[in-house]
Length: 222
Image (cartoon, rainbow, N blue to C red):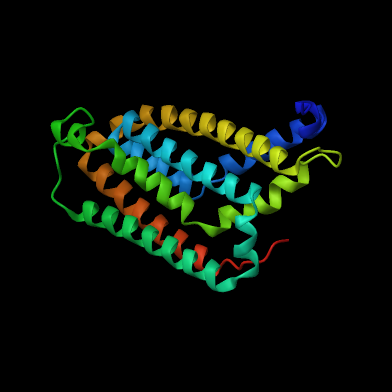
């Protein structure tokens, strides 16, 4: 029987790991922006659906890192670039959609309106999943970050990867849910058409900028 304590770093190591995960989650990026924008536009249910999709994407990356799939991206630039371009294209598509909403006639819809209520939550889940899975930088991050906290005497590096990846997903999910709660309190600003247009325009611009930043990343591990 495997001793779980041997699969994880000591208390000090776990504290450093948890602190690093918090800093990474709190740093604004694609996932952060998507969580806030979907909450502001669709309310708490939309924000939570996006968070669940993002977490599902993190699970995919954690599994890929644990079983060596992410390493293929580091040694095969063509595969890295293919996923990179796909991810950038999806971000551009999201940004363009927000820009279009910014220039549409003002809508009187609110978070409780039939239009917003009728939007399937799986669309927000899909947005979260795809923005995360189609970001190869996340895959390489898991591959570079998690090994630093695998104990030297671990009886199973794969099991350690999975446990640390699970911790990352859980902590990141809790942080994102807290972010949804904060963004929801600002949701009442959406009642003003000018603010609604401004947030859509800003969100679209940020997604476009993030797509360009994604394309500049190289498949090289530090």
